[in-house]
Length: 326
Image (cartoon, rainbow, N blue to C red; front, top):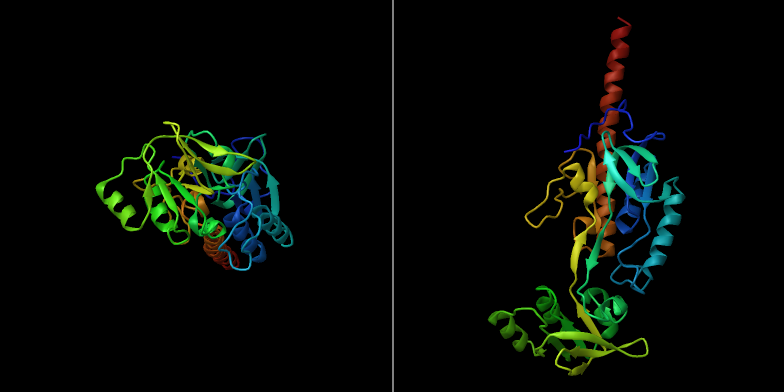
């Protein structure tokens, strides 16, 4: 496990570190930017490092975010970057390779930043099944979150691809938006209870392994089975396997749960002192608005933690000053 002491005299293990920051935020999605916004307004010295690979880049719009419903994801990030710049937050394009002793944040290329506290908001990636057409249509008319995208395809013929156990719940949920939902079990082994619930909700099952998505004119037209039959559909939903970008956290030795996800308290504090995590890197279910809230909560906690440290240092210095005059 990597040592995470706050010793200000620790030497940078790789290259020369620049002037210390109060907080280095890794990841400039909704969680990282919202944390940086609050910390910047608290007049903390903050740097945000981002590699420019947002998870929701394929999506044309995001939904469920009060006052931002329907906004393109890239536009939200543009707004956020402009807002944090007003408060002197430093935004750095780059990739963090490792976080070492005393919170030395080492980037690809050799740049090293010193931090008193670190917030990891690196998100996750969606692992997609190897079915022809899936990657090409992802975020267009092959969708994931019903709460994010089902309203836009309401009352249309929908498909749910059984590539993940979570697809059953996804299919049941989608009945709220369409009366015409077909579930393709694909290679998923449905239980008797799964089949009973799907039937009770009026979902049709089409058995057989999926060969490919049928695409024509840059639009999804249907789902083709290995046997040769093609079932017309206007849009499809797929439950991807979420894979957290948590290498920095695991390298630091942060505790994980039984499923391998990094555990935090309600503020995002990890088991390693001085290290917080927020957003999809610790919660795959967090929508953009929830991730932003997690960033805000972490920022409050980090600033309070820094304040406690500042006060402890100030009290100690005052005691030494008083003792020196006696």
